[in-house]
Amino acid sequence: IKATSMNRSKALGFALFIGALTIGLFAQIRAGAPVQRFLSVAVLDFVMERRGQGDEDWASGLADLFEIELQKKGVGTLERRDIRYLISERGLHHHGVVKAEDILQEKLPSVRWLVKGAIRRKDGEQFALTLSVTDPRTGLETASLRAEGAYPQDIFRSLESLAAKVAP
Image (cartoon, rainbow, N blue to C red; front, side):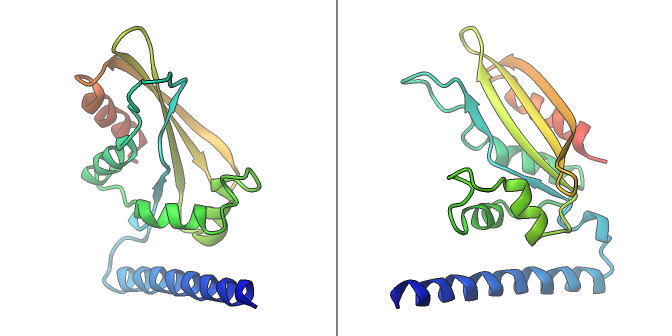
């Protein structure tokens, strides 16, 4: 009985969340906001590849910084905490049952591009940052972008440069 009521509570919460997003979309359309700019890009959490024991997590916060760079260029983005909520709704993503792209496309068809990022430590304090831009409708990667430099000096320049390539 408890499991059923918890599932109903989650379902109700999720329905309210989707309803609020829908109302927001219609409010933007009525206000004359360009539809293509509303929720056009979803930036997923970045990961640090091959992180050694005791290594600092260079990926922490990079997705947020990249999203800010996109917004500076006029690109509409989906709120990152909403993305995390959708993906972790049932813990399916972490168990490998479903991909983030599948969840976002089903729940938010107005998302035009998904951006995933990975940073890798190279020699010393050097990094390689790779972005993958995916079309959630097809699941096909449409672009793979890369930047390299010294950490942390070059990270902001690299994010700005990559955001300029993603922005329409």
